[in-house]
Length: 449
Image (cartoon, rainbow, N blue to C red; front, side, top):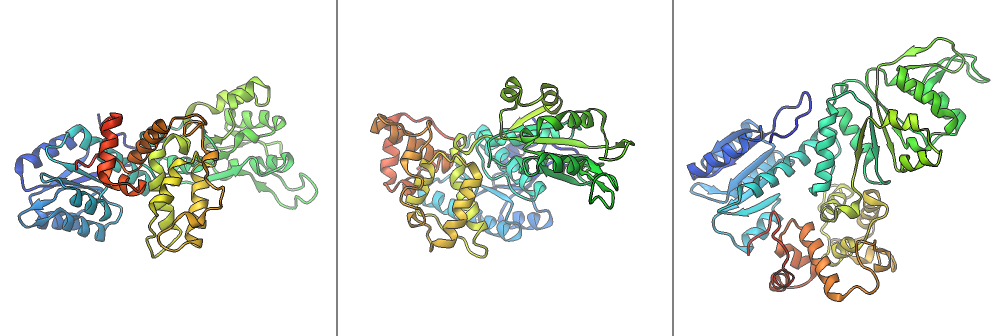
């Protein structure tokens, strides 16, 4: 199945590097089925030459080759373009190689003979995440299936002109997703105009949305266009539309239906050509049942419903997000996160979602030396008593708690058992034994050690 591609977006370029001609051909055929553009190289030197001529979105390279190794290829690739994803392949799997690969910046590591389905899935995740980051200007960080499904759906509907309603909890990245949709849409050359419906009292919100004419009220010395007019040709983002006062909702509904607005104090309607994206952290369907939100407006907004998962629903992204924010808030350096600090992050339910984690990491970078440890937390902060219902509960057995924590840590490390052992503060042998004892299923990206 081909990757969905937004209008105007070219298929991603992938570089396959292997001295085995059969392996190169097999990988090329596999990747071409997804609609990707594929270049191949038979060694490290040829790979670096081809990458410098065309900076690929993903490089899949063997480690051991006659004229160099995959680590050298990865370092050259990273030096040219840090955003390029790299997957390393080897027929001689070992724990030291795996650890070195992940520390040097590899996105994934597979031992030959590799299961093509797993490799393709890993490549898809990297390409979706990197393309969303590049096109949106700010990254949707994470590789969890829940997040990738949301990104895929958003990319698919971006090329349409239908109105969109994004319903998700506060702090999950609704505005980020809306801006990504605009930048992938045919309207990307025009403006995205945003207004927070919760930030204005009713009287001011009306004039902000629809504008006013000179003399419409005391102090209106000049005419002023509203957000609808400013967004003409582009996208209007109605942030937190669930906070829209009931009295103003009929006027908003008419503007959405007719694509024309009436400025306050003016009798001549103004035509607008816009696409509307609305966001809310409130359950609008429940609000309709309680007569707190108009049903006709709800159905008019909800042409294409989208959602984003809460952070507690994608725990495998927590470590990646924490590292991303640590680097973002410490420009010029790359802080490391102590294993016990990461473990505490993984145990917490994050009611404030990504925004809460971002704020915590901003403070952690400001208060801590390298590595960042538990000293940045208040005594009761991120404590077990604050865990969500899908984490720990009174009466849970120690065995069930241990199993869940191990599963979460393996998810967060994409199946890298060596890194999981480091984060949990136990030996690699212990992690292996626990996986066997609990009968945990294989994970995509497991490092075979």
